[in-house]
Amino acid sequence: MEPEKPHYVYLLRCGDGTLYCGYTSDLKARIAAHQAGRGARYTRGRGPLELVYSEVCQDRSSALRREAEIKRQPRREKIALIGKDHVG
Image (cartoon, rainbow, N blue to C red; front, side, top):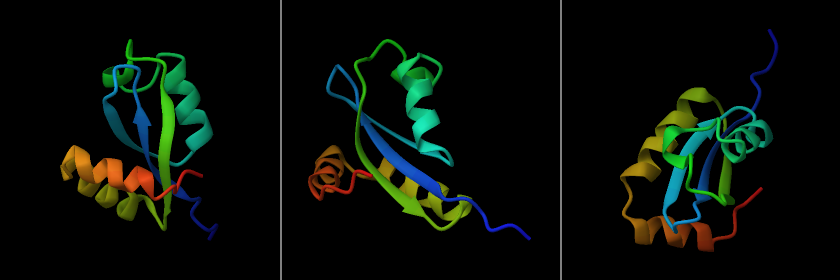
């Protein structure tokens, strides 16, 4: 059995200053999709978009749990998370 590829949770800062949290198994392609307007409906028309945080998760399930956890956090906690400089 092939090992599962990494899964990522990420935060984008939109041009209007809002933050968007998402999940993907291919971070580079997903960011490119957001930039091209093919990402989440929320990010369309809110460019420019900047990747400000990402973290690697063990599997899809843990990434989805972490995404939900981050989405429940108030904005100030998301800003603090970004401040830890975990991009990449």
